[in-house]
Amino acid sequence: MAKVTSFKKLSKKKQKELNAKKRKGWGELKPTVRVVENKKHYNRKRKTRIETDDFIYGAFSFKNQIC
Image (cartoon, rainbow, N blue to C red; front, side):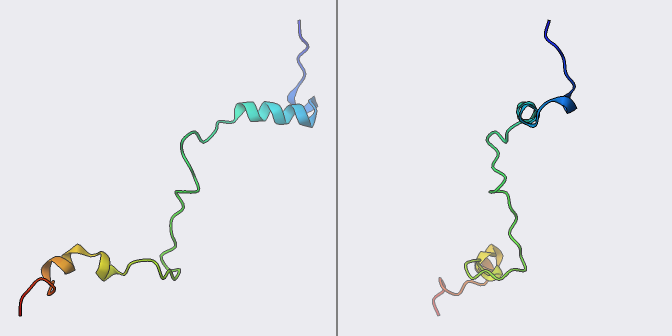
């Protein structure tokens, strides 16, 4: 029969190994990808509202009209 010792009395190395076994990994989830962009921060690469809004281009597009 193996002796059972309390978790607190184990060495730090053994405690670390047991804790690592209990933890679950992220799997296919990548938490760094899910960081939300700060909208107040200036970003020169971000498209403006006019460029991304389909309604404005659809209703008021003068590029395709012949004057």
